[in-house]
Length: 81
Ligand SMILES: [Zn+2]
Image (tube, rainbow, N blue to C red; front, top):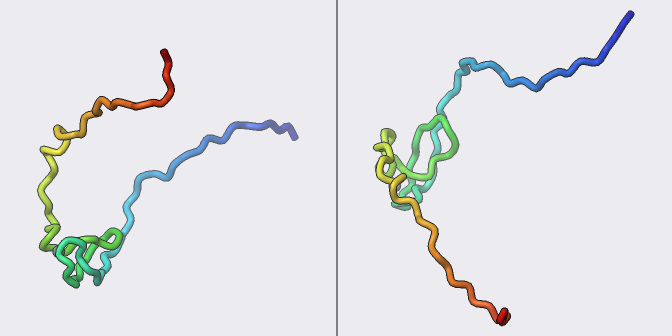
């Protein structure tokens, strides 16, 4: 029986639907330090619903305020002259 080697490519799983469930986390809000609880699909939240409302406004102004690289003056003890 003839045989040969072929290259099997890496492949990713097709897009599909998956049912996930929310969990209710009891935690202390990082902003107001209040013990609170919050239901979320994702990982443990950091802020309560008052500090971070579920439908937070989209960040639209932040991209224009990126920190620009600053010219730095480096001092050296080595005299290149
Ligand atoms: Zn809070």
